[in-house]
Image 1 (spheres, rainbow, N blue to C red):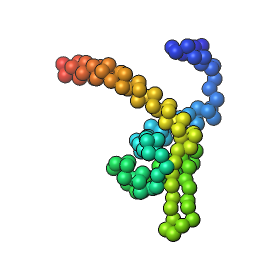
Image 2: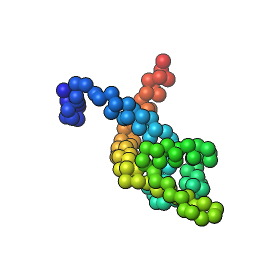
Image 3: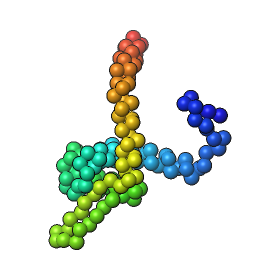
Image 4: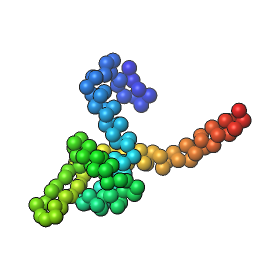
Length: 131
C-alpha cells in the first residue's frame, strides 16, 4: 500500500519504532523544546542563563527539565568547564541540528500556506457564527 505521497506503507509497524516516534513527537511538539532548539540553532553554544533569557517566559525549573530531556535524547550536548563557579555550556549535536532542519521545513510550509490556513479559519468561523 502507498501513501498519498507515494511512499510505501508497511503492512505492520514495528511497535518499538512506533513508540520511539510517538515519544519524539510528544517531546519536540513541546513548546519549550522547540523554542530552545531554535535559540541554540540561531545563537550556537550558550550558557544556561543565556538560553533562559533568549527563551522568553521559561522558568528555571522548566529550562532545566527541557535541557536534560534534550541531552538525554541526544539533541543537546552539555559541557561543564572545571572552573569556579562552574561554567556549563549547551550546544546542539548533529542530531539536534538535523531535528532543527526537519522543523525548518514545517516553518517553510507554514509560511507558504499561511494565507490558506487563515482563509480556512475565517470560513470555519463564518460557518459556526451562522449556527
